[in-house]
Length: 254
Image 1 (cartoon, rainbow, N blue to C red):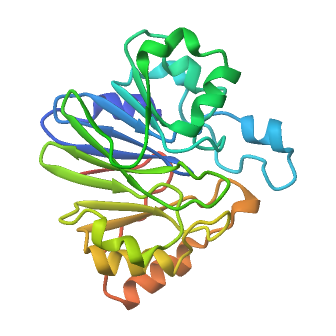
Image 2 (cartoon, rainbow, N blue to C red; image 1 turned 60 degrees about the vertical axis):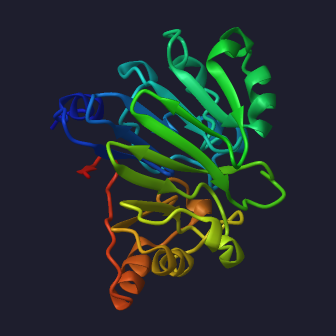
């Protein structure tokens, strides 16, 4: 069985690929072979900081920081399962990878002594947009509560495809009018804890945005985070909405 890094490297050029790394982590490979990563959690730093009671890693480590070179890395907010303090500094060590992180991640950048990489780091807020190679990236509103008031969602435009990763957020129907449409993929949390959407909320958002498929995330990594993917699947089927359940390390071609 191929390791995840080998699987990503072997994914054929000329097509767009999306891979799940577990928790809220995803990697997009463009048709030209460029790599964009969102919210990779590759270490055990949450358990080390928060303790093993409810925060022990329950999904295996499938990828090492040094196995792939990314064109862009995004951290949507400073919670450690999204800004992995044991991983992010190593991702920038090649001198070329660009990091885009919410403005409230600056404290973690300083804590991890990453100022050396300041030329590679951009702090972002909703409404900001940028491009890296084939990737057009828009940062959009999300609502992760008082614990991460500056968190962002991410809309990735690549190879004519639109991938919307909501970031950690509750369901805000009052903001739906400002969210992207004509989506190929909608990705959102279903754990219903720490201010996130639950298994019934994400289907509501999918019904309104009408993506070609919806991928749930933020379940299975920590016992304390909850998330019932079977319940989500049943609700989506009942509403006749398309969804894709990606096991950790699996990918789809868009």
